Image 1 (cartoon, rainbow, N blue to C red):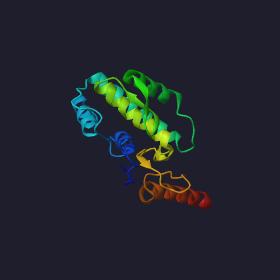
Image 2 (image 1 turned 180 degrees about the horizontal axis):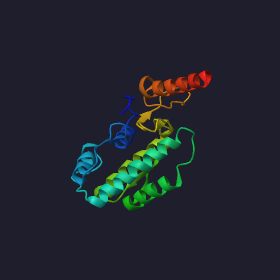
Image 3 (image 1 turned 120 degrees about the vertical axis):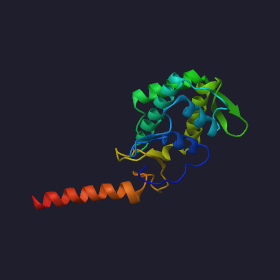
Image 4 (image 1 turned 90 degrees about the horizontal axis):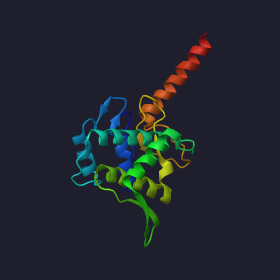
Length: 186
């Protein structure tokens, strides 16, 4: 992780933490074994005692990276890339997400599958809830390709680009300054 970031509001923080189970900069991954996945899903309150297998782990990692791509699209309010959309839709189908009418919040997605598929569906339901309440568009990933840490953009203009202005933003500005300086001395 290049920089610390503000937690996302409510249960959207669970989505941010899931994406950040891979720290690209340090190369550490909290989801390298099925038992680590089971433990993470249980600790996040998405599954109670779900036993993950190797296939579950592969699908969870694919969902994590598809969510990372979806968060990258939030920078420009672009559509979610087709490959990421296919992974997320497959996970939603495996979770048997259905729309449930709630007394105060309207229609909300909820998984009817159990196990790891249901837990991943619960994660996608949180995404659906965030889309409905307007917080989803503020969840992004750092534009620094060596970082890509998920962060919640609290800027008034919704224009945050880095997980931390002090770390990744500063690095980008230094690179740009060095580039301009090199051009002027050539």
